[in-house]
Amino acid sequence: MLAPAEVSRIDKRDLLGIMSSLPEQMVFGLDQGSALDLPSDVRRIFIVGMGGSAIAADVFAAWTMDRRATDIQVIRDYRLPAHASEGDIVIAVTYSGDTEETLSAASQAVRIGCKLIGVSSGGKLADFCKENRMERVGVPQGYPPRGAFGYLFGTIAGLCRGVIVDNIDKEIKKAAVHLEEERKALNPDKSTKVNRAKSIALKVYGKTPIIYGSMAFAPVARRWQTEFNENAKILAWASSFPEADHNEIEGWGGSQSSGRFQPIFLRDRNETDELRMRIDATRGIIGRKAKPIEVEDKGDSLLSRMLGTLLLGDLASIYLAVLRKVDPYPVISIDALKAKLRSQGSASES
Ligand code: F6R
Image (cartoon, rainbow, N blue to C red; front, side, top):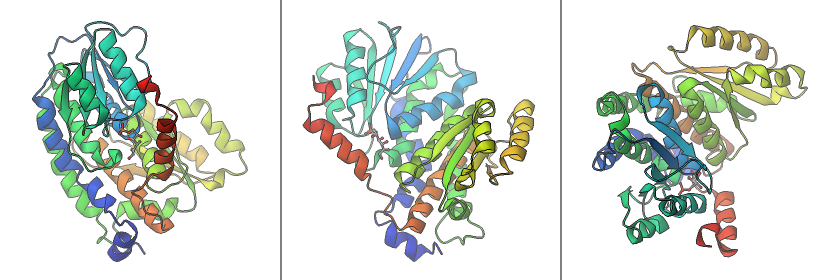
């Protein structure tokens, strides 16, 4: 099961290889973004984007949360918040360069006098930045947006490194080394017995995963969800502690159908004592209905562990696609919806 030949037969365009290039992508993106490095006295940074582009910003913002004086807000919408104003920096991230929500927020940013920086592989955002004499960092073309996570994450980190108190370049490069090790252990040639991504895929097969993260791992849980959605083509949800203990836990207890769901807890050795006790106690209660899969990366820095966990989810979702015999690469419904909206005249063009 999940032998290399079966994986490459179904994953025809090697999405697994693309996702596994995360460490190289990240280091490349960091270099690109660093060329524009923002000043350290910026008041506020808004990063606008959707889906596979926005999640890179979420992960960056969560990772650097305790180490910056500048507020970084990630916006997934057509509009910037009302308090955005002249002097704020807006980084518009759209891998394709054509996402209408992101283009709309980018054009609002220029209207109200924010400094806009684009990040894309080309598309309308490239033209827009040129016309408005705004800078843009280009990322390599030819990837599905979610498969360019490393380029986008690295570029955002390079752009924002001036507002972070420590030298993050070193940490990113160390995390890349850790990811190079991790991906070897998750490769298709490693059997299900030793390959954690394959064994997670087998446990999730036939179920609906609900992925729980806390603190910096909340956006990593969201990435797991979206990767299960887009690659394995299944429904999945992300949730977070401590909030889930104040509502969702009741659903686990009361629902007849809770056995259909597979809880996955993203843990970290540096979670606070309160959280550790809370999550362990929650496992006891949810465990009466469904045994949670617990995942913990052994990396020596927070970023290594966040990205090690993220890569594990990416690859587990592709192995799940193989088990389900669906090509993980195309996103037929997302593309169909975008085409329909384009044919009706996109909001960003109005
Ligand atoms: C597709 C994917 C999507 C896109 C989203 C926005 O691989 O991950 O979630 O990221 O539709 O498109 P971009 O990233 O081009 O702005």
